[in-house]
Length: 205
Image: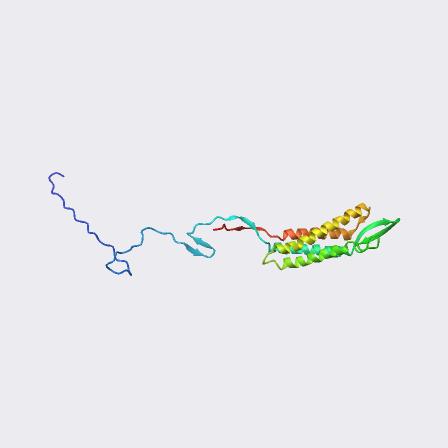
């Protein structure tokens, strides 16, 4: 204000910050940067403060667990059906006015018929079932699935061919051949059901 004596400003003392513990005197002091840095806190299965990673679409696994058990059971049932059906009656046909019963080991000409093929396929499916049961933890690989797939397809094609042949010859298929057909279908179902389900996988870094 006019007429009032001028005020004298006190100089601001330049106070140095305290030295950092552990650093020699006489050297420029290094101080940590100001501000708050977020730290990551570890917890089993999760990290706080770390950016989350997106989950990539699932990729097929090799199977295992309940699916391998289900596939093994179907393969076992299919193999048993093929073996049991090989020993039952396959067809009834009329020859020279007489009705005869045909089996997988004897056709109308008293010759060996198609039972050896169904027996071999049934035995292969039982072996594949045992391998599926042993793969409940490690997973069902491609080799084991191939071992189950090939005899199932072979038995299915063979039985269908026999059914068509009987239809052409005007013969009636019996329970043994139908049971072999059921075994081949169960083998195919067990092969594909035991492949496993999809799971999520992390993206490649």
